[in-house]
Every structure is written in C-alpha cells, then in structure tokens.
Amino acid sequence: MIFLVVFLHAASAVNPHLNNLIETIRGNYVSNADSNWTYYIASLTRDKLFSENTQQLGGLANIKEYEVKFAEGHLTEAEFCQQIGLEFSKDGAPIEAEWFLNKAESLGFINSQTYFARASNYAREWNSFLHYNEELSGALESKWHEALTKFISISKESTDIYRARLELTSIYDPFRTPIFIDSLAPQTISNLEEFINKYPENPCIELAYERLVWWLYETESYTKLCAVCKSFLNKHPNARNTEYIKFQLGNAYFFLNDFDRAKKIYSSVKQNLVPDSVYPGWGGQYILNELNDRLAELENRN
Image 1 (spheres, rainbow, N blue to C red):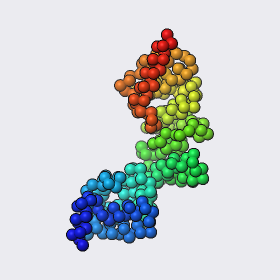
Image 2: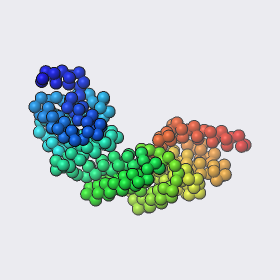
Image 3: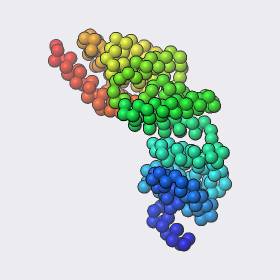
Image 4: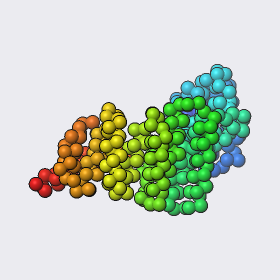
C-alpha cells in the first residue's frame, strides 16, 4: 500500500491526499473534507509525501515549502492550514480558501491575515453577482465590508491597511472593471475624493487618483476630470502613472472642446512610459491607440 501511494505520488507530483481533499472541497462534499485533511497531514509527518508540482491544482505554487515546515514542526497544524487558505486566496480561489481558513479557525487560529483574505474572497464573489442577484450581492458586500473593517481594527499600520482603506472607498473589486456606470458611480467618486482629502500621504494615493479619474472620464464629468488631473500632476509630478493622468487631462480638454490644449497635452505624453491602467481593458496599448486616434483627429481639424 505504501509503495502504491508513493508510486501515485511520483506520477502526479502532488500529495494524493491533498489532491483528494481539494477535489472534495470543489465538489462541495465538505462533510468528507475533515477526514481527507487528517489523511493529508498524517502523510506529511509520517511518509514525507511532499507536493513537487501543483500546477494541476490551479494554485499552491509554494505549498511544498509549507508542507516541509509543518512536517518539521515549524508550523502548527492550524498555522499550516491557514497558510493554504491564504495561498488559495491569492490565487483567486475563494471556495478553497474559505474551507482552509474556516478549518484553521476551528483549530483555534485566526488573525488579521484571515480577515484580509476573507475580504478578498468576498469581493471576488460579490462582483460575480453584482447586477445579477441583488440579494446575494448585498449579503456578500456586507461580509466584505465587515471583514475589511475588522482587519483594519486589529492590524498595525502597513501597506495592506493602506490598501484596505482604499478598497473600502472604491466599492468595486479593483481586479474587475465595472460592467455598468450606474447608481454606484456617484458614491464611488465621492468616496475616492474623501479618501484623497483624508489620506494625502497614503502610499496608495496614486492608485486612488487613477481610479477617480477613470470614473470621472466614464461618467463624462470632464470639468471635474480636468481639475483633478491638474491637481494630481501638480502634487505628484514624478508618479508612476503620470503619463496616464496626462492622457486623461488631454481627454478632459478634448471633450470640453479646448482642442489646442488637448493637442498640447496629448503631444506631451511620453508614450514609452504609459502604464497599464488599474482597470482591465485599459492596458497601455489600448491607451496609446486612443491617444494616437485623438491626435490624428485633431490634425484633421486643422
């Protein structure tokens, strides 16, 4: 039997008990998951069946490192379990992450990282249902807000806290472009403006401005877009996203029919430094295409 397990392990390069556990969770057979977990941790401490390649699992690239630490006694069972949950959360797998984080909590281990990971999971699920299932979307939004608020309340100042404060203002998960410019837009804009005024030294301030100008552009608030872009460029001339903000300033002038200023700003954009926007679909190449199309249109006006 041991030979067979070792043979199967060598063939798959993933601990077979870990594989069974994850398939059980994904199949929603959670009543069987606890026993699979027991088999898995026993195989690590007793048989040293470490996972060499987890590509087939769709994540857990660093799992062997944590398996070894657990087997050697450097991580408790609860800490090891939480670490798997955190890895799945980073990989964008909320169902798997939730099971391992809950299991770790049942074993007596929960900390600020748990709440941050749960918030990320809720955000992904929430955005999947946004605009389609109002009741479920609202429930997930509440859980997201609660988890992030709890994370902030028990954590020390860190980059993650700065990011969490920004997420609470932005309403939408940053990894997914909003589908519609709808009733959430005014609240998002108001929240981002409040964040910028309240936390001007926050390390995420450049990202906050980038999101704000995107919303102002999409809602055709060109006068305010012009003012926000000029304020940012005056305060943060060497920011990572300076060329993107200049592009949006050019857009503001363009749609306000101030074509001379629009052309001047568009022409000043250093095209080799245009970054990808925070929102998917607004990559650097897309922005450059828009920029050059506008310049061509302005040339044709002359």
